[in-house]
Image (cartoon, rainbow, N blue to C red; front, side):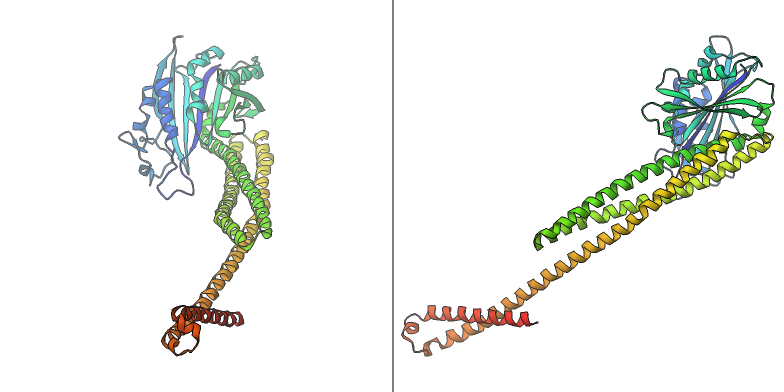
Length: 457
């Protein structure tokens, strides 16, 4: 292949709706830091090692995202244009050049790192590909939270078997890793043959951040692909950004749905526990209900958060589908109306299915929110009623005892004062015990009287 280039497009979340203005997610700088590590360990371009000094979001080598505020351009480079990383020699006598383009696309950091031979006519085949250190550009090193795309472009003779060449290139890109390449489609883009692959992580095949999206563009007809690609560059960059966001958002939505289902399952167990309390005595019932009251509100809050997040994800995926469609239409216009059938199918089939799935999940979970609320209200009502009854019972007991002991104290005073006036032999013989006994009898009488009064109330 001649006019060869290998490009990494990586996308990393900078901030979400939960961050305050000016704040970023905890690992916002991870993309830039990992690119610096790549420069220090494998692609030893001097300017890549010194990338921090070329980015507006760093000051004296320290990450400072507040410096991005007020920027009227998406460029994050200090110069406001691409960063020339210099060149590296190879053992075959040719040099590899590189440039880097850093962007802030709304809430996302984006980078385009492109490697190419110093001279465009230098032939690059499968063995020479390893000089470009493609393994250092894979997700295990870049760790872009939203995902990444590797794009290879090259020009070949019309007689070249492009299908076989694309397969070999895709395998060579992930050689020595646990990624498995799967071809997803074949078509045309800007007059060249386009082969699209997904390199899936064997351990986490459903996690888009662990995958590498691979595009191999082979020009076997001397088409003006490079010129058209430059013209469509911004649209292609934003299309890839929307593509990775759609995959990322859908993954988050499925995760939140699973969490909500677990909470709902726990709620069903709590309802069974609630029903079992009906066979307990009032003391055990009240204790059990209070225990439930300590758990259910937090579960209810977590459930509502899951549901709200799903609604947010539905809005986000809808927005990115719209952005993707706009970018695709612009690229088609530049590409003379090329339909790009697979990318159209991604919108019309996959995205539509995912969008509908999130809405179905929301519809399925929404009644659970009402059930949570009713359950909490039911428990609270029973607890409050039981507590009120206990409080009323305690109040009655206090009143009964108050009447009894108050009346008994008065009677005791009377008996003590006039005990000597009672002419009974037993009382005259034991006046103290007689006074005490009469006081106790009087107290019991007053307690009985108090009980009758409170009972009547």
